[in-house]
Length: 310
Image (cartoon, rainbow, N blue to C red; front, side, top):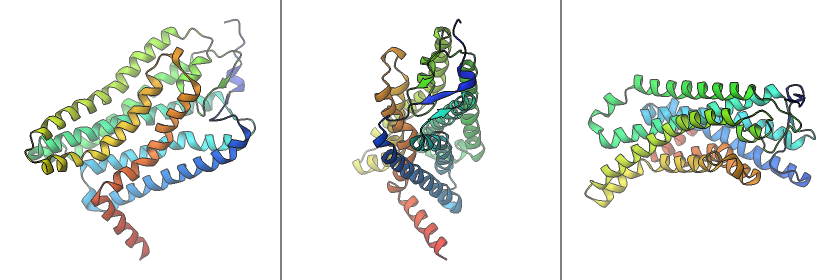
């Protein structure tokens, strides 16, 4: 290209959530509180699950890994965002940007594969309860968890390698609060059409697989629930899925809104709001959704509190 490839040396500037100087400190305070709640909530979930043998079952095994992934996921984005609220420059180096993009994609996809594993767990528990212990053995759960991580990291690696081959020209201002692939792609002066095709097909495969798995599981679960004769029986069976379903809707609702639109219909402001939903709000709500809807979890938290007192 005729443009000098300046970004490799000078990095990018992240515009952040708002360019209004009056809003920087209030936004810093809000996001710091949300980040601390996310860390504390998810750490508590992990502690409760590991300290109480009642929770040593597949559903909670996946939940503890989901909580750990959520801590990593928000930690990839929020600390840098907090620093930028208070700094004048708001820069991120070229390598820093690619590293952030890599871990963001790796943890976001691990989240969706874990949600799919949890859907499979609910499916087996409801539709095949007699063979549940055999089908969802500890070994199989570990395989599912490891596969979730490996597939997600390979996908992230492919995306970042493709991204690193692009040239960036005059503008290096990212209209976002982190190095999200979409706004970064918009800055490239390379021909991104071929890499966009690769990215779209591969992303569809990686993201659609867990999503379709969740849809399929819930269709089977609903069919099974409809066969339950009493209304209370129906509700009791379905209530075991309530927490999981709430998180699926929150996570996938905002993700689909952000990523499954062509680049042309991309709007920076709407996009940032939707992105905050799944990068900051959902990981913060997960522990509440799981503990408030769940008797065992509440008891486990109570036990943990008593143990800390003594």
